[in-house]
Length: 407
Image 1 (cartoon, rainbow, N blue to C red):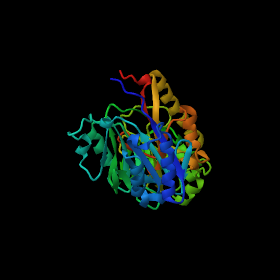
Image 2: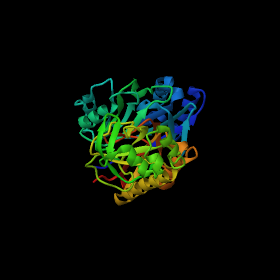
Image 3: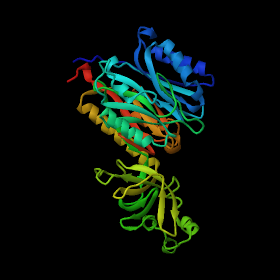
Image 4: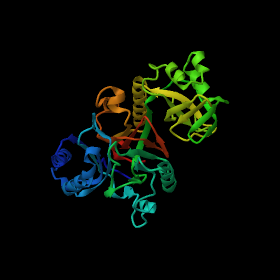
C-alpha cells in the first residue's frame, strides 16, 4: 500500500481578545495551504488553550470549524500550552495543529459515549493500536479509567495527560465540549507513531524495595523503618537521625540538596531495570512520622515495588530530554522514517520553572529533531502506556516511511 506524504501544519498565538487570537491562528494555518483555500484541508485538528480561555473553547472550535470545515477538532484547556519553540501560561493563548490523516485511520471518543464507539462497526476504521488521551485531573478514579481504556482498546500505547489548571477543571474537546472523564483520539495501525517518556528528576539514593506499606504510608524499605532509610540516604547526622522530634529531623535535612523538593520514584517489582529513574513513576514525599518511622507519599505503593528517592534537577532533565530525542532520531534513521508532526505533554512543574526560560524545553526538542510541527500542553499528570506519571515529558512523533512507501 502506498501512503502519500501528508501535510501537518501548526500555529500558535497569544492575545487578550479570543476572536482576534483565533483569526491569527486561522491565518497561520491557512497560509500553509499551497492552494490558498482552507476548505481543501481535511483531517484531525488538535487544539489546546490556556485556562484563561476555558469558557471559550467551544466558540474557538466553532470558529476554526467554519474556516476549516473538513477538520474535526479535539483538545482541551490546560494550565499552559506549547508549540514549536514557544510555551504559554498565565495569558490567553492558543495552539493548534491540523494532521492530514486518512479518514478511516482515527476515531474520536469521549466520556459521553460508550467506549465501543471507538470501534464503530459502521466504519472502515481498523482496531485501535494507539490513542491520544485527555483526562480530567480531578477525577477520583482516573488511573483505573485509563487502565480500563487500554484494556478496551487492546493496546497500552496511550499518550496524553491530565488537563485543567489552577482555576478551572479543564473542559475537553471531542467534537463538542466534554466535562470530566476521558476523551481523545484512537488511531488505527495506518497511523504510525513513535513515543518516549523523559524524566525531570535525578536519583539521590540507591534503589530500595518496599517491604511493607499501608494506604499512602511506607512503613519499611528493605525490611528497615522507611524514615531511617531516608535519613541514611541523605547522610543526616546521627543525633538527628535517631531523634523522635520531627522539627529537629526536618532542620537536619540537606536543604540545598532538596531545594527542588523531595520525591520518590516507584517501579513494579517485575519491571525491567534501566539506568537512573528510567520508567519510575515519581511521586511527592508528603511527610514523616518520627515516632513510627513512617513516610507519607502521594500515591498508594505496593509491597514489592522498587523505590528510589529523587529530586527535580535541571541538568538531569536536560540530559534525559536529549537522550529521548537521540533515541527517536536513531529510530527514524534505522527505519528510514520521516516526521510529519509531533505532540508533547510536559508536567506543569517543568517548562520555564525547571529549564530556566520560557520555550527552553521545546528548543531542546527542535534542536535535536528539527523544526517539525509540534503542539502540546502542560499537564497535571502525564499519560504514557496505561500509567500516570509526574515530572515527566511525553514526546510522540507522527511518522511515515520515506518516499511514502509502506512495507
